[in-house]
Image (cartoon, rainbow, N blue to C red; front, side, top):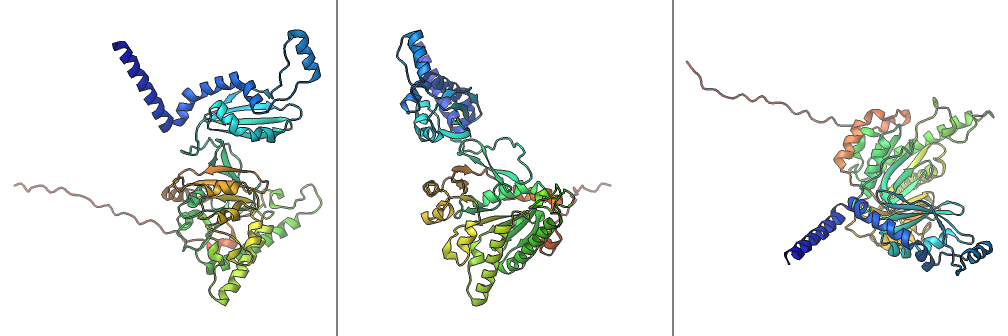
Length: 450
């Protein structure tokens, strides 16, 4: 009886330890327990699971004849040919060679069934090449506690800013997606996304330009690394024409080198390194403040600023000027030009919003099925967002936590990397020097002797 109680106590302790590790340290629990069980389950049940999900096909006549002649047994449907299992810190990866007549969409439609059959958190499908897809099995909820993977060095304008739900990094690549719209309600994590983006860009020779009509409370802490900053609509109305003129000057530079030689180019990236201008990233926080007007004079100023933003969005890519437009809501009700500007913003990031209409503004025109996912984001998960682009694909991401003090310190440390753009020099923010703390000598009093 004592031995039975001892074994029961040990089993109970192991169960409690496993439950704690699964909650507090999901990555370690996956590698120690979840991964071996999932590998065994996948290998043992692969054929039956594929058959139950309708992912098998009839074998070829030659194979059916060979089976009948050699084994004299019934010919079974053939599942996709499985490659080697590749374990990762967050799950498993396996490549499947599709059988003739199968489509990657067939596998993607069965992801939920495969998830339950193999006991993992999620299953994602990625198209590798014609006839080959990759299954990404995620062992646990990687978005609950974000841990970014090791950076792979994507390039000057490719910044990993968040973690995707399949365990890979979401990279903000301005060369691939020049302009982006970031929406989110108060306390949704939009500012955290912006901090990670600015910190990533600050490490390279990129000119950062900010328009923050909230008197600069969001972007002023990064002033040491900014090449220009406008903190109200009046300053923005002066800054935007300068950026448009800079864009025109860069087009003139490109045109001057279109001499018919091998170095002919239509954008700044084809110019020689010694004359290529530095890229400019314009960050607009609370874009609605640029649209709101109260008087006739402000309406004229608004129309002019919106026109300049649209010109930058339409023509800025080839000149190395990119837009990151942020706000809580962005639609036609803001005024003339809002819908046209949104149409030029290829990338879309939608955090938690206050209503479904805002989610439709962000994702409805490029990925309608992602609207419901964006509307279902809970307030308890700040930083969680749905990202999509004009290709129609979308996924969930979450930004790692980064304090404002840490982000500002990084910008101060990289202030020497701020490129020199003469046209933006009048708008360079003044960085206040931190007050020096005066050291006070402490003298211990001693009784006089003598």
